[in-house]
Image (cartoon, rainbow, N blue to C red; front, side, top):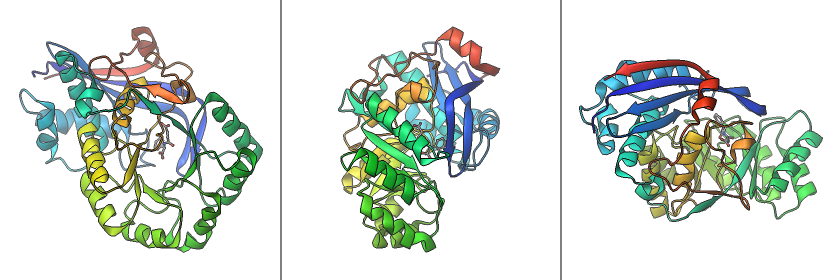
Length: 366
Ligand code: NPG
């Protein structure tokens, strides 16, 4: 498939409410979009890098630079999506930048062939169960109000962001107010060390689905030690950047669940490899999110429809984050999102809305 050129577009998307995690507070999402143009079709990829390297070493300006300076020149002349990972291999890291470019090419290729992404990936469901991620709040009453609102909207699972100083009390308050039937999990974004094991063990009393990424990204051994001291299953997110990392974590006993974020681990083909590996090893997976617009959300929902995704994902409705999405909004129906059925990722940006939020565009002829 010949690529005529690539557009790098930056958009600024205000969030409906600040989103606080152990690594910072977001009030708006600065997103890099990649549009690949071929004679037959166009394809979109959303880069999940944030504007600052606080969650991972990658950041949006850096991703744009890596794409224009290193990834585009490394592409084969007529790339097929299956060759891209190999062609980009010599460039180390930068998995968010690689994922955005590969997804745009995959989308263009599938649109040209008339094939939906969900079909290409091997999806077995037509809708996916949805959870919601709830940020750190200023007070417990504020948190309880937020959780009540999400449960009213129909979310099937609640994930609470935690950090030292905001962990046992909010979890206990949510359990007391909403009962033991609510599917509940926590996400520490690497905010603890192994010396916190006694405190984290108190979470066992609350029958959580999982605790996500309690320790630092490269602490696979420490996670394995922590797993022996907790009854709550450990789920890894930041630690898993590839299928190789997943294999190491499984072999070491560092986790029993993995959060797959395609935009962070190099794209949907690598995401499927991790899914297949986990399925073969009896490890449950679920689909994470990074505040994607409708473009990234559409592709995540397609992935979440694969058979090994047995836990609800952070595949929330568009309005969880954005008053106006750049695509038709994803809406919750009985706690589920429908998997798009159109060719490629199955959704398009709405031109006027996209123009309104665009802060810059750059065209690169190939
Ligand atoms: O629903 O899209 C979503 C966000 C879910 O909590 C969520 N994402 O650590 O998993 C995370 C967190 C995140 C958001 C991480 C943005 C990095 C950037």
